[in-house]
Image 1 (cartoon, one colour):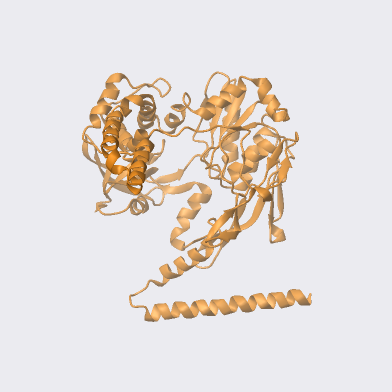
Image 2 (cartoon, rainbow, N blue to C red):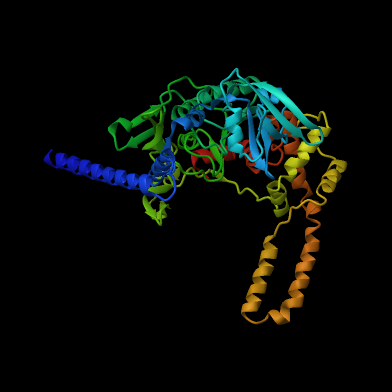
Length: 532
């Protein structure tokens, strides 16, 4: 008891001393710095730097940022339902959400925003425009745009409460296979997954894919609810363990499941994090389904919200979570930093745990899929076309000149369309350097260092020229890949999120592996039994 009292006194003195030092530094800067400083901004940056030194997930939110924080937690905000981005010094509509004011008013991706409520947006950044478009539901906003190929247009729109769906799409890949795309864990995520699964089951599916790729997580209790759709009541899903005993909790499924037997595949990738890893890791630990894709992000840290003075808030890491096998999937150790960066948990420090059927799994590395699928990289030309927004711009022109197209699953660009795209690219910049060209440049550098360049110069220059000729055929060489990108972007302009998902069904390597596995039930069962 005496030791504890001494330690508390020592901590209090250290805190008090350093707060005095900070106040003294701030006072000198505020009074004597050569230029005028902004007190609020200065303190905000100091707080942000302090918290970032702990981990990237412990954040402070000023009163002005409260709306952004509420959106992170609830997925809801007041606005028109559109995303924007900066392009060539202009602000352009990037995406509109189906069923919300912007889409219902026929604002389209590719529209260049000129003014909001009569105020020019020239010179503004996309985040500035986002703030102008947000507002209380029921209030009106006037937007002036320039539509490529159509000219200037004015729209008066009534803002609404925008609630982004956690399940933006669900449907059938084929007669037997259901598919549910989950992109968030905001309130009602569990209900949305349950409703989608129930509907698909009533449509006669015999197996289901839950897609968590790109899902960065959210509310922990929604992860528990989603697991509960597929596993029995009373199953442990996750435990949290922190410094404070109040943060040591267990979370179990509470409800009657929808189906505990139907074959299930969960898709993950490097952006599947936090709550996504609770769901996929629990499904794996309980041997309820097979995980396919790439190793997940590895975020096993739990955040809690603290309300502070003057309507400010902070999100604070308070615990780590542990899934049913007992493993924590946190990949980075923020308590052991090197050169200011968190260190990866060393292989020698990882521990082996076991699933219900005694399959070995490791901690400290995210969720490792039962079936690893390498995702092929896009060709250099496709990357360049995307980077320079040429796929986006062609889709804009296509939509503004074509009133309708077939449903996504039936839509295909014909040779005339691809010819139009090739003509569209004439005179536009989309230069790129291939790995082969980089190797030639490295060879030139080495030849100069070793004094061979004089003898090899003509040959290397000829090789470069020949390769430039080869690159002119890249549009044809990667025709199928470019066609898929164009069809997806064009379909989105007519069918929104449904198009982005359904256009990938026939060329998604993860979905292909899932279908192969479903069609080999002996292999599916062998993976879960641990006999492979």
